[in-house]
Image 1 (cartoon, rainbow, N blue to C red):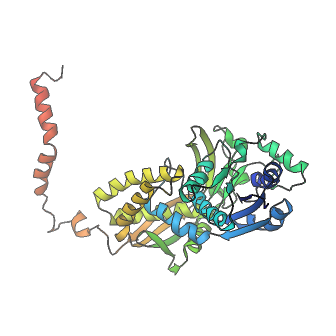
Image 2: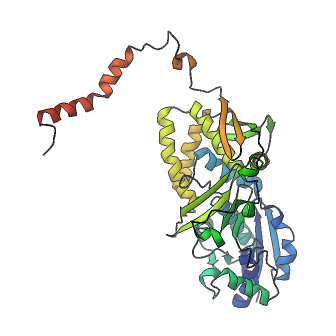
Amino acid sequence: MAKEKVVLAYSGGLDTSIIIPWLKENYDCEVIAVCGDVGQGKETEGLEEKALKTGASKLYIENLQEEYVQDFIWPTLKAGAVYEGKYLLGTSHARPCIAKRLVQIALAEGATAVCHGCTGKGNDQVRFELTIKALAPQMKIIAPWRIWDIKSRDDEIAYAEARGIPVPVTREDNYSMDRNIWHLSHEGMDLENPANEPDLEKILKLMVSPQKAPDVPAYVEVEFEKGVPVAIDGQKYSPAGLVKKANELAAANGVGIADIVENRLVGMKSRGVYETPGGTLLYAAHRELEYLCLDRQTMHYKELVASKFAELVYDGNWYTPLREALGAFVDSTQQTVTGKVRMKLYKGNCTPAGASSPYSLYDEDIATFDADEVYDQKDSAGFVNLFGLPLKVRAMMLQKNGGKID
C-alpha cells in the first residue's frame, strides 16, 4: 500500500527543519514539503536540497509574491487596518495566502493531511488552520508542537544536532523571525522582557536605524488608483515591485520600526519588534489621500471598520463572510481615492508633504480665511443654536432642580 501523504508548510527554519524527520519517524508517511515564497528572499535558497536530505519526497517552491500583495496586502491597506494601533499585520495576512496554496497542492497530490510548525502559544496555528478548514474541511491537520515532547527552541536545536540536520540559528542568536515582502518580525531572547530597549543595531535586517539614516530628508511621491498604490515617483510597478521599491526608499531612511506588546488571540501578551518600512510609507500616504477624498461620515465610519478588519485578519478570519463583506464596503469607499501624495522621509519619520486628487473634497474657496462669496457666516448661528439645543434644554432643567438630579 502507498504511504499516506502529508503536505508540510516548509520554510527551512528551525521548526520545519526537524518536522520532516519527526513526521517520518512518527507517522511513517510520505512528506511533501511546500514553501510559499511571499518574499522571504535568500531564505528560499538551497531549500530543495535541504528538504530532500532530511526526508521529503519533493519540495514545491511557489512564488506567491504578486498574489500576496494583490489579494491580501492591498485589501488590508485600503481598509487602513492596523492591529492595536501599531501592527501592520505582516505575518497575519501572509498565512492565509500560504495556506491557500498548501490546500491546493494537498488536493492535487491526494494528501490526507496538512502539517504546520506553528507553536501552541501563537496566532499562526489559528491562521493556518482556519484557512484549511474554510477551503478543505475534510483535510486532517497535524500540529507537532501540540503533540511532541519538544518543549523549547533549545530542545529543537538538540533534536536537529542529534540527527545531523543543519539549522539557521544558534543558541546565542535565537530570535524567532518571520520575513516576507511586507515585513520582518523579531521575537524572543532579550525582547521577551518589555523593560529591555531593543538593540536596533543588532536586530535590524531590512533597514538602517533612524540614528544611521541620512542627515537630509528624502521626498517620495506615491500615486494611487481607487486606493491601490500604482506608482512611485512617476514609475509604474507591479504590486510586488511597488512594495519592494517602497521598502528600499523607506528602509534607507529608518522608517518603519514598531516595538509592540500585543494581545495575542490565544490570550497572552507578547512583545515583538517589527520592521515594515514600505508598509509604513504606503499606509501613511494612503491615509493622507483619504483625508482629501472621503466625506466626514464615511471616513469616521471607515475607522470603525478598519479596527474590526484588523482584528479579523489578525485572528485568521480571512476567508469569512464578515471579512469579505467589510472588504466590499472598503472597496466602495475607495472609488474616489485616486491621486498623488508626497511624503517626507527623515530619520524614522514619515510626514506628509502635499497631496492632490481630481476627487478632492477640499475647496479652497470655501475654506479660505480671506473674504469669499461662497460661505455666508451668518448661517452658522442657526446651525449652532440647533446643534446646541439639547445641551441648552438640559441646562434649563438642571436650573429648575437646583443644579442637581436626585
